[in-house]
Structure formats: structure tokens, C-alpha cells
Figure 1: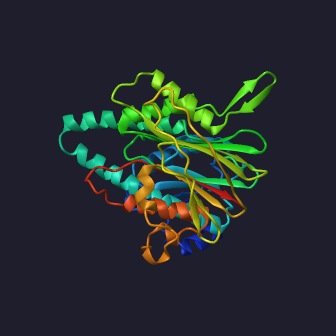
Figure 2: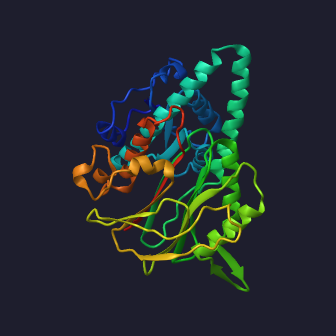
Figure 3: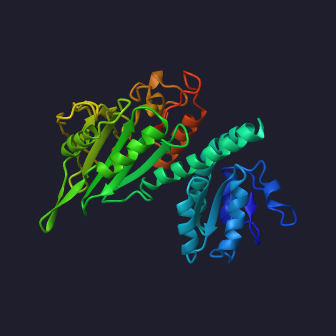
Length: 386
């Protein structure tokens, strides 16, 4: 749905041809009613880009629906961009003069998120109809979990850095409001970038709390005198393991992790892993390699020391680091084209990074767990060497 005082601009019409027909908001009817069956609401404030009262009104109506709000903003609306970035999840923004092909990617990304929002709204609506007392309790819990989810997302990177030829993208799908997965991408200096993915055993709030501890405890570089030192991946995991063990956590809480450091000048990748699925390297010709290096689970053996491996990347290579919840999406052998199904990774390897992540997101949202209700958190971090 197009929400704006001006007619639908040409760039939006061109993008919609590849995505979905556009309906136009009727100002004489309540916005909430018009959003009932809308997947993506395109909002162009038209001179009200920094009018927070207007924007909060529109955002409130969208938030009460299951639509995703995509705001097209002028470059001058810096305050609104910050506000929308802090909200995350149901709201995204783009430049109002965005090219149609880039807008298509944004629209598809929003459409991939919308079924999950719709499901959550449906589940909450059904819960509220059972009885007033139960409904109020669930609503209180729901609000607390929303706040917890927002807090956890604040620990994730707001923007993935670009260092040299390294470009990153990520798929992050918690099984519930909060996740036992966490990832980070850190620019270490002008030529080095570090990135990790960790997966805490279990789900829910206990697992989410441990991810926050991991975020704060993971050492990627340290000050030495008047200079700094990049902490090697094997040392980072060794120290993280010791820190987790020192907490004497109940319920046998432990985690798996992969940490990598890339030298963007030499394209040398140094990596260490603790009980985690091996990263995958995808070459431009479709061949794959798995980066195996020995390492046990984190948080079990206090004196465990982790090993490092090195790998020489080349231009055009792609690296995937993921949690075990993503393994069903990546289960087929990408090198065996004859065994690949229609939705297997083998058919997606050479897609653009954004398109690959959209396909994986759609597959994740449509997947049926082998045990009813036993969905797992899913994280896939993609590194492309351009």
C-alpha cells in the first residue's frame, strides 16, 4: 500500500512491477482498516519527514497491523532515520529517490519478514480471546518479551562494516522472541575485520542472557602500551571458554562458536571453532570447501585450548558461517547438482548476497520442524570477497 499525499512516483511503480500490485491509501478512511490485508506499507512523508507526531501516528497504525513499514525519506530526515533504525523489526527505511532495482530488494526483504509478523499477530490475537485474565497475563509477558528481544537486538551490530573487498550480510531468525544465537562483525583496524557466530544450547531467556555475556566477554583486540593487538581467534575462544567456566552456570549451559579474522590485504582467513558447524567456502565455480579445525564445546572444560586454521581466500569467494539451526537449509551437498532439490542451496550459490539471504529466509519461514513446536534459532552470516 502506498501512503503519501503525492501520486505514486515512477521509481515505486517500476519496482512494483517485479513484486506486487500497489493499492493507494484513501485519506477519508481509517488507516488501520486499510492495512488489514497489507504486507508492506510504503510511506513517503512528503515534507513531514521530521514531523515526529505525524510519523508516530503512522507507525502506531502499522504496528497494530501485521504489515512491514518501509519509509521513503529525504536525505534531510536524519532524525527520522535514527528513530526508525532504533525501532527495527517492523520498520525499515530507504532514500526516497532509491533506484527501482534496489527498491525491489527492499520490498522483497520486507515481504519475507511479513509472514512472521502476521503469524505473531495471529497467535497473540488468539491468545487474547481465550479469557480476559489469561489474555492480560499473556499481554504482560508479551510486552516483557518484546523488551527483552529489543534489548538483545541492541547487542547486535547496527551496520555491518565494509573493509577492503569484504562485504557482509546476515540472516537472523530467533525461534521465539529471544534467541540463543549471537553474531558480530567488528572492524579491527584499516585492513582486518573479525566476525563470529555463537550458539548457546537451549532456547528462551536463559540462552539469551548467555549470548549477552558472550558479547561482552569476547575479546577481539586489546590495548598494549600506546598501541593495540588483534587477539588471534584461538586465543579469543580459549579466553571466552575460561570466562564461561568461571561463572559456574547452572543447567549445564554451554555454547558453540566460530571466530574468524580476515586480512583484507592478503585475503588470509584465520579461524577457530568450538564445537560449531564448520564454515563453508564457496568458490565462484560452485565448488565448496569446509573449514575444519579441532575444538570442543565452550563452557565445559576450563583448561581447554583452541587451535587455529588459516585459509587463503580469493576474489569472488564466499564464506558462510552458520548455527546448527540453519543446517536443514544447507543440508544438501552443493557440489552434487543431481541430488539438489528445487529449494536447495545448490541452486542459490551464485545468487547475489541479498537474494541468497532472502531465499534462505523464505525457506526458514516455511520450514516445518520435525518435532512440532521444536523450532531452532537460525543465523547465517555471509562474507563475500568482491
